Length: 510
Image (tube, rainbow, N blue to C red):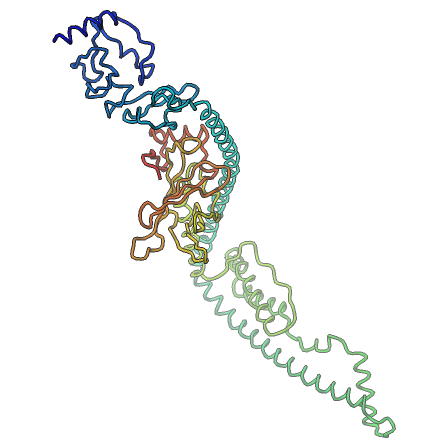
C-alpha cells in the first residue's frame, strides 16, 4: 500500500490532468489519446478498464493488462502490437514478441524502431524508392494490359456477332426447310405418282448411255487397230508390186488421215442429254399440269427439274468423256426426300440448342464481357521447372515432359472473379480445370489457374499443394481490371447485377 501511495503521488506531480503525450514507443499517433493518465496519474487497460495502473507501469517491460495494451513498446505481452512509424514509407504493425529480439524486421519496420536505438539503420527511403519503381511497373503493366484487353474485347464481340449471325442463318434455314417439309408432306400423293412416271424414263436414259459408252469403246478400239494396220501397210508395202487393191487401200488411208478430226465419232452421240431433259419436261408437263391447278403443279416442276437435270448429267458424265454444262438449279429447290430434310432440320435445331446454351451460360464460361471467348482455339506454352505447360483458357491444360510425353491435367470447367491484392487492379480470374488424367495410384488430376494482370500471356508459377492438384498463376490482359470493371464486379457482389460470374474473396494464397 505504501508503494502505491508513493507512486500515485509521484504520478500526480508528473502527469497533471488532461496532459498530452506527443509520442510513446510502439503506439500509433491516432491511439496516443488513449494513453493519457488521469489527474491522479492512473491509467486503465484499454480493453479491461476495471484494471487500473499507475501510468509509469506502461512500457515497464512487465505485462499487466490481459490485452497487452500496457506494453505497446516492449515484448513483455506476446499478444501486443508494436507500431512502426516508417516515416517516408508505409507505417505498419508487427507482433510485440518481435520487438527487441535482435532481428531487424525491415519488411515491416523499415525504420528499425522495433530494435534498440542504432541497432537497425533506417532503410525506409531505400524501400520507398523500390516501391515507387514497382508501382510504376505495375501501373505500366495495367495500362498496357488494358490496351491489349480492348483488342481482346473487340475479338470476343466479333465472335459473338458471328455466333448471332450463325444462329439467325440456322433459324432461317429451319424455317425454309420446314416449309419444304410441310409442302412435301402435303404433296405426297402427287410426288409418288410423279416418281412412278419419271423413274422409268431415267432408267431408260441410264441404259441408253451405258450401251452408248460400250459401243463407243468397242468402235474406238477397232478403229485404232485398223488405223495401226493401215499405217504399217503404208510404210512397208512395195510400190513396185502391181496390186491395185493394195494401192487403193493405201491411198484411201492417206485420204482418211489427211481429213480426220476429233469429230470422227460424233455420229455415235445420237442421244443428247439436253433433249432427254426436254422430253422428260414434256412428260411431266403432260402429267402434272391441268387447267384447274396450274400454280400447284408448276411449283412441283420447279422443285423437280433441277434435281432431274443433275441426275441425268451425272449419269451421262459417268459413262462418257463429254463434258456438259450443269443446268442451273432454282433459287430454293426442294432437294432430297422428306426424311433427308427432316434430318437436316434436326441437325440445325441441335446446333441452335448448343448455341443458346453457350450464350445463356456465357459469363460463367467466358468471364465478364465474354472476354475469354477471344481465346477460343488459342493455347500457350511456358516452361516451369522440368516441364512445359500448355494452357488453353477455353480448353485444356496439359503437362509436357522433356521427352514429349503429354499428360492431361484437366479441361476448363468454369470461371470465377477473384479479389486478389497481388494482381494489378485488385482482381483476377480463377479458372477451374477438371477431369484430367488419373495419377498413378492417386486421384484424378485437376487444377486452378489464377489469371492476374499482364500485358502478355505468361505462366508465372506452378505448385502442387496436394497430390495431383495443381495451382497456377498466369498473367494475361484478361486479368487487368479497369475502374469500370471493378464497378461491375462490385455490383455483382452487392447484388446489383445478375451476372453468373461468381465473385469470391481471396482468403488464402495459391
